[in-house]
Length: 483
Image (cartoon, rainbow, N blue to C red; front, side, top):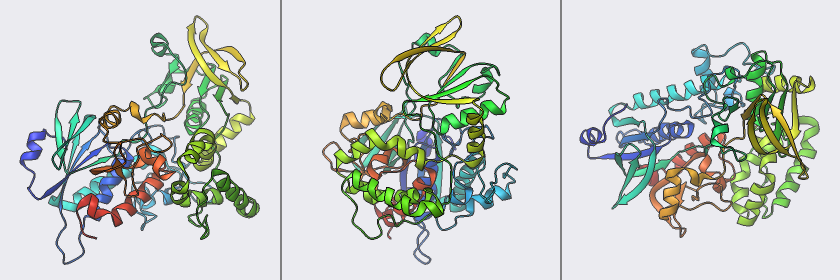
């Protein structure tokens, strides 16, 4: 699927809609799949428009991104496969594909019959579904994979020119920004020499990252969320015997799964509240009412499904208050850990093999005895400890302007940050707003970079649901297809 730009342009039929998709992880793959499905015309009305997708993705693999690129079989999806289908009208699609390809390993099924397969296998499902969808469309759809990064988007009349870091540029009628999560940033100042030290693992997803950790080494894991849980499971599976200390400024652990709910009835017909305090009061009341029978998880899920309406009703200062004070607490309850991973981590914590502490990190320096770490306690007191190895598991950064493409769009005024400043500002149809708040024709954004506009857009089910529903009612503006 790789080609030169002039070759692609030469063989493109003149009636083709050209769509540049920036980012080939889960969001990019889901967008292409649903754009193809939405472009089908009703029977008797023709075969639908021709589509040329120019997918800009550095990785050789499409549909995986960071989340599903891991090769460790113990890194599992944290939602059952029956809730991870790429198609809302076919909830068992992912499970059937996994069963058909014999990818339900013996440890993937919990006591309730839910399947938490490895993320590698789920990524294979996404990639295969994309290939099948493109193939089924026949000559009407062409997908070209450009192994590059986009650095700028310029306007030439009604055409967008996407500049690549290879020196080439692509012309497109529409551009879909699907760039996913911002790369993690270091949690403290770290010198270049320290970063080169093999005792420091800045990327826990790097191939064979944990093979560099001796089994008796003392390990500091910076971060206590889902990435830390995966890190701990990988270490313990390799027979790690040394002490593992996990730290974060709040010491919050990802919570376990419970009963699942798909009920979008949190508001129960009421108008969305205009303050965070009122939302919290409604959530606490619902948890108190339902938790004795069903646990707290269904109440959180109900809020999640109504969150777009609730979020957009909150004034920008209230949204910023959520990001500044409450987002970490929401994340550990919203993004829950797979039961298999939770059981291993719970047992390790009870056995004191893994110790979780509420600490921040302010510095790292190599010594002959190991890495000297400066830690900050909750009330500001500093202490120093030495560890044999350090693994950074701090999750994606919030500053998306560090992405060269996003930075160039902001600098040119063709995009602006959302109210809380954690993503790009888009309207209800995911169309970008420029510096002055005007909609930018032909330029759309999907996935995690729109979280600040919708309140939640991080998990695969949320991304899929949003794209599928949007392409159902906005396919005229995005694809030029009549509804």
